[in-house]
Length: 230
Image (cartoon, rainbow, N blue to C red; front, side, top):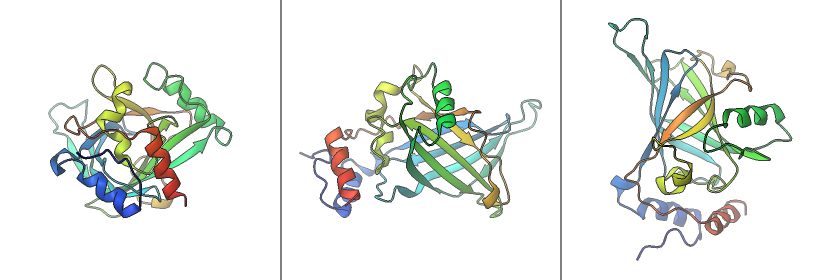
């Protein structure tokens, strides 16, 4: 019988176990979707949920990112699709003492969602910069946030986005709404500007229903943290 990551022995062991607990077809590619700066644009991407990284930099975890431009004022014009390269997702923990304005915005945005009343003290920040696959001079950047509570305290593995971890946060449509900031597309990667801290929209995340992996317990998350911080 296969255990659910009961022991954290080494990075290689953890990575091997996270990718063999279930068949490859069930590893899962959760889907994010959310509006861009332009109201007619939507950014969509998948996220590989079996990635593990002590550096908290999950290279290639952002899969098939695409910016969809659908002109609402001209129904005869088909949507335009702008594909981006697979991206790296970076994870960090931010403190309310250091960013009080950001936390106030997160608290306001979380009202009426499954995260209402949960952004306090610390939060988890997920960040990525995407490169246009057809034009290497085009970039866009986004961040999204979760409260620093179980299971999001699992910052060294993207298994936090498995269906089993998010059950208590799903809305009636089977989605989780994450507050986000997003930049317009820019040709200068050094000047990508996110929306102001007090202006937020949301990413709608749909977990892969075929992903049947067991969630990590708080004890296992602590074991993983201790391993990565040695």
